[in-house]
Length: 186
Image (cartoon, rainbow, N blue to C red; front, side):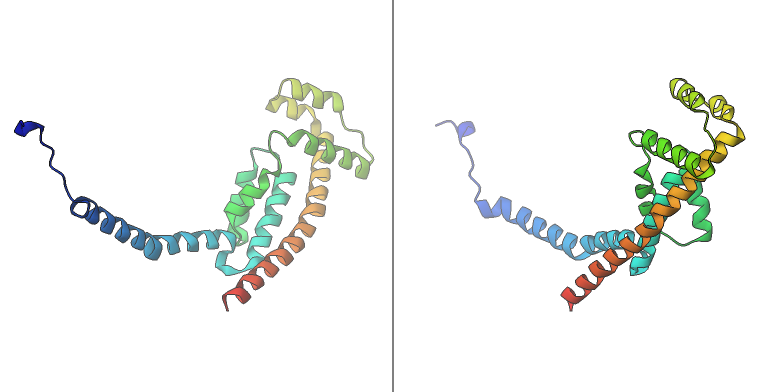
């Protein structure tokens, strides 16, 4: 038999045992060092300072800004508000996605209709449809102060009407969840 054709057979322990031990050490390192830090990071996102009140406030702010502030200005409004109030910007940003390209038209229609109802002033709908055909800043300016007053009155009222119950509902839910988890740990 030719020597070059012979296969050298290694025992399974000689090759795989160091790999297995290395894998065990990596897994142990992950479970003991990395995973707790990741869990703590997610807990901080869910409950900053481990308090449901901050999370509930973040949800309410996200709903308020998502409805009251036109798209494109929401992030700036949240950043400015963050200077005055301590809340979780990540949660508020996520919740503000209540107004997105799929929901913005129904939201704007409801906001404008509610503003018309409250103020008893007619909104220039033909300009709104013109804006939908060719969106731009010039078209927004054509709404005039009366049209913008109707829009912002409706948006601020609807945002307030929705965000206040959202705060109390999310606070109650998060407090129950927090207490349930605290009891389970003890």
